[in-house]
Length: 285
Image (cartoon, rainbow, N blue to C red; front, side, top):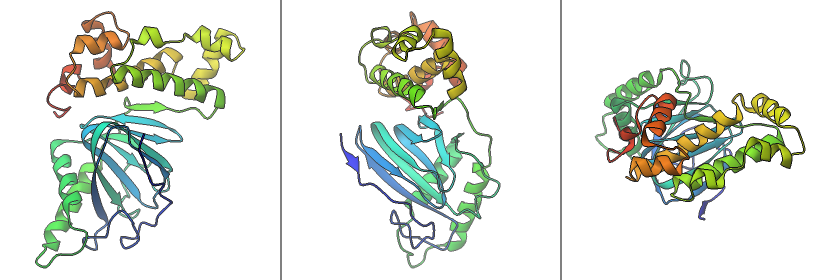
């Protein structure tokens, strides 16, 4: 597996970001990058806020409070100073925005997933295309208006369902890692879920505790029941297969559902849209 160089914490002053040189003295700058399947960017942080958006493919963002798995209709907002790492679930085209803390006032105060509308998608892509150095004849007034509109579009309620809460308890974290890997195997077209799954009783036995005690600890550590956490992990991972164009019925069976309809119902309840929205259209509305 290929891994990007480990990035240290970096200042948010536009001249100091190693990822880019500022195109103009504006509170928002952007960068674009295309990454191969399986590539990881190791844990790092920024002194500014950041929006991570995958134009194509499924991006996994990992922080200490949880993991976000997002399709092209969503972006991950990270507050300043938050350590995070990235994993590409398939080939991914990423666009990142860096927002000065002062400009981020009125934007989300906690890490979250936000909906990326067609307008916001184009604004993100526009800022990410700006050159790494000022260009003669560049319309600074226009760029300022673009940034103002972009910041306005970012002022929206967070989208919760794409978040996997991550426990601080080491024992429960080990369970969640195994469940997440199980889900990734499903999303990549591996074995069917029931062939991979260890039950709550199995995990309780491995951790030398009663099953009721295990359920109580898991709920306290994650805020979700064992069954709901596992279901969310599988559904999030299944988006990768849908975006790759695999038949929904095949994805449903691999994710552990007995039928297309049962999978579609669970998917719609979780994400507010049918799995067909993640077919050939690449997840775009």
